[in-house]
Amino acid sequence: MTRVLEDFFEQDPVTCARRLIGCRFNWHGCVARIVETEAYESAGDPACHTWFRPSAREFVSRQQPGDAYVYLNYGVHWLFNILVKGGEREGFVLFRAVEPLNGIERMRERRPGAKDELLGAGPGRLTRALGINGQSHGASFLRAARCGILLDSPVEPLAGPRIGISRARELPWRFGHPASHSLSHRF
DNA sequence: GCCAGGATGTTA
DNA sequence: AACATCCTGGCG
Image (cartoon, rainbow, N blue to C red; front, top):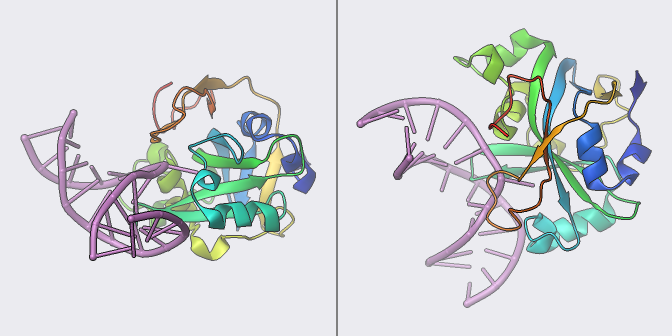
């Protein structure tokens, strides 16, 4: 088990999104298995924020690979992405679902009433469970003492169309762990 | 299944 | 000012 460092996110977004399935995500001591991701590309992908938000294009050009891109969706839910840049293609990986491994008590406290299987079963649910919010936007967290990603054995993921978007629905850039019971939607 | 809630970046 | 949005929980 090796720690994922910045150069991991110099691969293209689809490669990163696939490879992160099954890996462990450590966020301030809470550890969770990544079971669902999506890839977004800054060039030619109408679903990516860079398509219609100058601030997102600015983020891609100014920030470093591996930096957190966190934004508020529908005025309610924080969504956690990681910047991918430096390779053939640039963009983001959206974290869509995780399964708790360590610190499940803290996640339960942050999501009162939620069943354990659903604690991190969605992009808004996982940020709530882990306590991620806009304060982490732009943060470089990969080398932090109590944060980071551990590269576990590769998993052959499920793949399908992305969720909740209105454009570029045909691209199969959503990936899921085949054995997980905490996916946000069926594949 | 449907729908409100709610903040933000962006355009008109 | 008004619009669309990488969602969720509650109620039917």
